[in-house]
Amino acid sequence: MAKSIPAPTQKDILKQEFINTLHANFNISPDEASDLQIYKALSAVIVDMLKKKRQRFINKAHSMGKKQVYYLSMEFLMGRSLKTSLYNLGIQDDVREFLKEFDVNIDKIYEYEPDAGLGNGGLGRL
Image 1 (tube, rainbow, N blue to C red):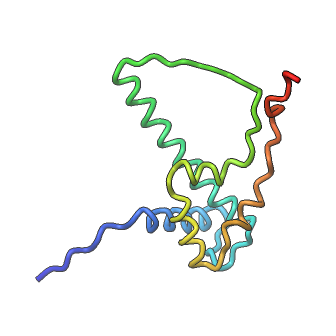
Image 2 (image 1 turned 180 degrees about the horizontal axis):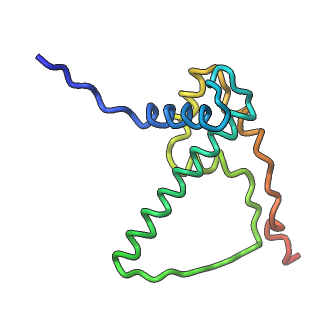
């Protein structure tokens, strides 16, 4: 009797993409990686996910004949985007868990991203 193999979880997929990116970009395993290398590899995985999600959205909007609206505002503080992106993608806990398997504290990794410091936080009206 053949046993069925369970489908990989989102966490498993993210973990494997992270390992592959670390190997492709730095030729190292997670156990050998510095925190900065982990930050760069994790950021690359997240940027790739965001690009794919954005392209799916654009394709869906175009197939439905929707119009695009462009709006640009420079009056905001962007802050750090890695933590925000993980939260918005709903994968913050998965990433925290698989990094913990490598004895990596994600809060320490967040600190490697510089604050963009763009805009004026809406204080220009004062």
